[in-house]
Image (tube, one colour):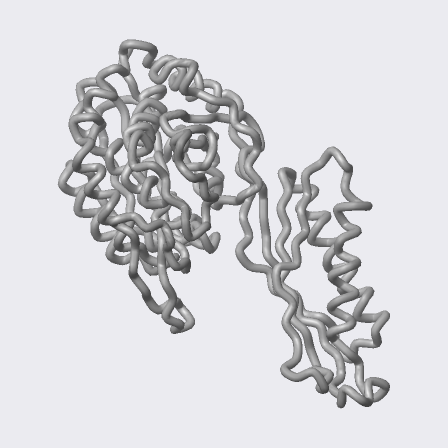
Length: 409
């Protein structure tokens, strides 16, 4: 395991490529692509990995580069590559003005509003540094660039596409995300639950249409849906331990077209979050129980329909792996640049990858905002991490973490 001065060369090497990293980042930011439609991004990543001597292949919509460098452990580093249907409002000179058709054919604005352009740039930076410094490490480095994180599809698509049989089995899987905290230039680690498990459910409840002036001749699904919304609030308030994190949100309720027409159905879009799989299962079961009970109480003529989607696993960092990476970060960056992160109530599909291989993992945060900079959260139209020191910190962090397994004494 490398310590202290042994990784000083990483900072120097990353600094050599600073201008190129900034150019790549701006190129990616100007040209975002929606989830599972990242063809140009994949092509650019693969071209660069090929140029750096990696054995590359496209799997499940993503791209993987393998660099074998003698006997030793195998480390996989994952970066996600997709953007969001958001109209950018950063005012940056390299802001995205791009639109593209989503998979339903609707033309939407597209923006890297979650920092995946930072992730790709840091991943390419790390891949290049390791390729140019093979005398400093031994083993195999697997650079994985994953599509479709924002829709919880990409990691599963790569696994279903044969990832496990097509690349060397890693001993550990690593990943990172640019966040609003800690500050730019810092990294943050956490043992145990790092990101929440999450899921969305589309619920359709059925009534009986009627004239608004003749409600007794119908069954009103709007009243039914409203009762469900109110009753769902009792799950967290009365069924979950007050010291346990849980969230149930009804983000959308749609029904009807006119004020004087009672419609025949209503649709609710419900989202849940938790830091524990048992709590997640309880939330899902409670939602179904309440929906069915309210439908029966209203005399609904048909059974409700449940359509789960965007299902994210818990990101639960392995304590030993996380401790090892944390120590390597402290040795490289100094203790003042390494923070202890609180759990983040967002969700990721990153852990699908190490779970498929049956290996431990850790996932850390890198700061994206300077102290005097306006801070906008991920997914906001104004989300604009400081280009530096974010890019160099992310690149160094990826290399240093990998070297804690691959580095020579």
